[in-house]
Length: 140
Length: 408
Image (tube, rainbow over the protein chains, first blue to last red):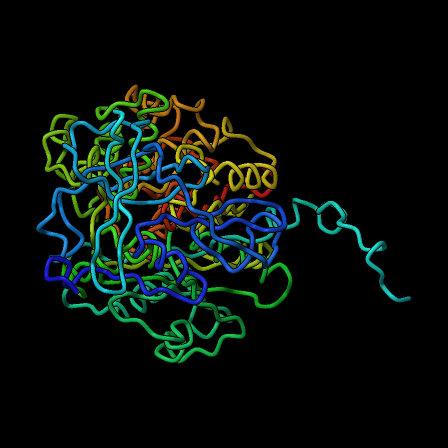
């Protein structure tokens, strides 16, 4: 664990989600696709939330998305997050369809708007855990 | 005959059960709040049994006359079998005993379940008592972390969300979609405080202005400190019994006329919509059962953990058009003298918010209003009340409609 992330709320990968976290480790944003109905979903599940199929594969998402809402957290949830406060919590609608929660970085909070185009960046927290964050797309 | 797949068809619900099965069959015959605010002298269990004691006294019955018990679990003093523990503590031996796992809409879901239990004969008289000590039973950081744990452990919590931040995402989306302003959000808090000023038991009674809200510390944009509900100790309880039995109690019965639930998601990142909630479904079901519509409601208690929640619920419950709730509140419709007096005890924003038990105060206040016993904050000629709770992050919704008469 790197010093900067000590005390944060680390995710605990499961058999179902391990593929996602391995993807993050390799700087690839992976979402699930149902081999039966081609439904794309996030977060990873053991079944397809559309057809209940059990055969799910990983697809490499483009990492592009749009901010569907955001907030600037001025009061951190715990001391471990104090150094990066204020931080921008956002919901990102991925270009592929599913929505995920993330944090926006490399930007001024005042510059964020709903609809802003963003792209994924990866932040290493430990040997096992790398977290997907987002930043304004280069094209902005 | 062996059942084959082709012979099994989904019948409409009306084929099994009429929508009015529960309407007017059960009444609230006891209701009470404990003291609220900062109560270090009470444990969460102490508050839970104190609420029970007060509600039994209000109903004029002994604890042995209760054969059903519903509680909610406590963060400050949790038990794996909470309701059973409270039964043991009170030395009562119910035949219906349920712990509601969470708060918000779950409270009214558990009321709906208790009503169904009475109608179906599982029990006769149910004590619903809920309390917690979020203010003095936990440290500030503990309280924040516990509440934020409603986030998804793997795909939300690592990002460091707080509960106000989750609701700020909803507020921002409503502002973006409908042009709702920070001033309109603030008007919800001002409305609550106006009413709390007339409630001698309220935690925060000092009147506030729109400017006070906007000048209060920014917690998670666009939500200021005064857009957020309180952190309190407190408890409240009600006693439910069948409409037939309800005639024998000291207070006039308050009947359950309608109830409904709706569940859209658990985690906000999975919401079908950020600006339309499952209050749409819970409200529609409750109105249908009651045979009433939004225009028939005299007083409403609308879950107000954060100001934007109230706006979305007012819209989804049909009190105004989608996107217009900001103006509806800012124009004074929800004041005591308005067209829809709302959160007449001061709500979670100004009366108190002890966490899981929070919705109970909406229910007891509705009872006080329908008994014409709400003192300085009494709504004139209140005959029908709607209470609405939501839990999770705009996730699980439940609506109850109450009335002074069964045939409304």
